[in-house]
Amino acid sequence: MAFHSVLVVGGSGFIGSHIIAKLALTDWRAIVPTRHYDRAKDLLLVPSMDDVVEADVHDEAALDRLIPGNDAVINLVGILHDSRAQSGERYGPEFARAHVDLPRKIVAACARHGVPRYLHMSALGADRNAPSMYLRSKADGEEAALSNPAVGVTIFRPSVVFGERDHFLNLFASLAKRFPVLPVAAADARFQPVFVEDVAQAFVHALNDKTTAGRVFELAGPKVYTLRELVRLAGEFSGHPRPVVALPDSLARLEATLLEHASAQPLMGRDNLDSMKVDNVAATSMRDTLGIEPTALEEVAPSYLRGDRPHTHVDAVHVEAPR
Image (cartoon, rainbow, N blue to C red; front, side, top):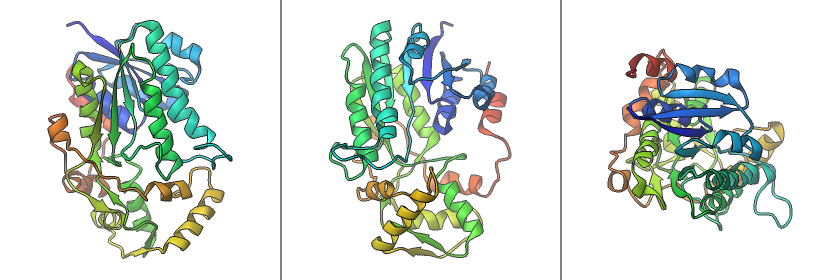
């Protein structure tokens, strides 16, 4: 069997590990660059892995070493928090670096070295005129991804992603274990959570289907929830049901401001509140656009929030994937 090679930027994270697991069942093999080799070396246990390489992907010289010889590049890099934008700027410097500058550098390197395909992770609700810096930077990142016509680009816009190691439902479940009541900002914000395995399948599908180049796909689950409902379900599924209290907007804004100053990675910042002014809901279904039947949250979340799965995702892949 002839193998294809894909560079997975951000591949050591939550979604990346699932994509690499899916690749183990195909003729694709992955290379994952990382700034912290020790944190990603367990991926070498996965049959689809060719190598884990210590590198700074923001360095164009490093990209010129990493990208040649690959058939495609996947970029999953994304951050949720940044400092406030300076006067006249659309977003802060870290959003610009991660969401806009990086895809522009990757696509330019793909074009220089004749790599024909680039798969880009954006976000549902990305829009140049969105109310949040995050969503505006994601929209500009899409524009950067499409900046060179020599590279066939597929863009994915997922809603919030759930799965065994997610930072969304697990966070709410953890808070439910610690507190008797859960105050929630933007409680009526609407989301359409998508299972991480479905997201991974969408990326693998696009790798194998060149007709997806030049298209944008929304990735969302089968059901829409308010944030209030999701917080309540996380508590119930984890065995710690708690009453959920909606915070008024003024108090939510004050809380977000205080959290921003208390931590470099706050649970909630003002820009997160701004993002939730826009419904995180898809206009299309993965069933219709990609032939993927979206998985219901209720089918998966109860087992991992209760802690019923004792092994890590990489352990499971190592045992189950064919060689």
